[in-house]
Length: 288
Image (cartoon, rainbow, N blue to C red; front, side):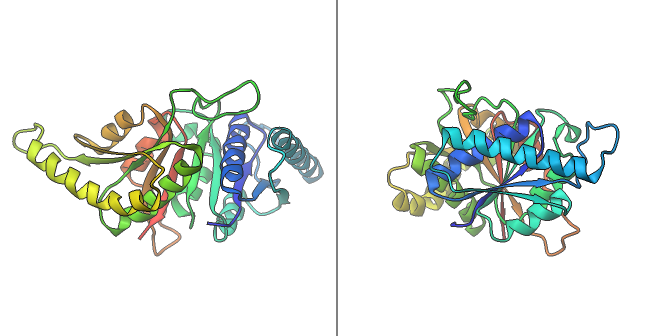
């Protein structure tokens, strides 16, 4: 991936935390950063619609302040800013065609309504042609300026795999590429359903799945020999297994299938659960 890391900005703490995450990721991988602000997308917490000139001026100010803050800490960044008139979701999806990733802010844990851009964020996460990352305000896994270091106990990129076939490769590629520059561990997670009859762990099934998971991880261990890898197989609901496995996560990677229709953008239950409850940034990676 050589395209820019594109950040969707508004004037919020979550947006700034997302920009910091994007800046660190771009610097580590020597990618350019593009800060994007849609002046026509009215923030949810503005009760009265403002004039076009006021919103454009405000957007330029947000871009200028954010760029200056990032460059004070990461002066090596190749950084550009863009004020756009297109709706935020449309602008981000268009740039996703050539971007390495899209980065968005979110308000915090809880329901769909808690997301900073609400349906806009979910729309982008569900349709982006590249990995899309949601970052919460004040996320302890994110270094956000001089006085906000990342938590010292966060050192794993957790990747939830619905299967161990070819569909897992885009998720593993993204996880290993993020982990390698920072010396992080990759924890690959597979959840097995409880037996419909006994509702207990099937240790033989877990052992067989560990073998399959190890085989799926083998090419990536060879490609990234410097990255420590843990295979994690557990029996139980997939969302709960992923949440438990993400205790030391600095990023959790989940997948979604590409859809032939742009009208179909649902993420599925596990990505939804991760976005609302896993306590670190979430990357949603499309796969076939």
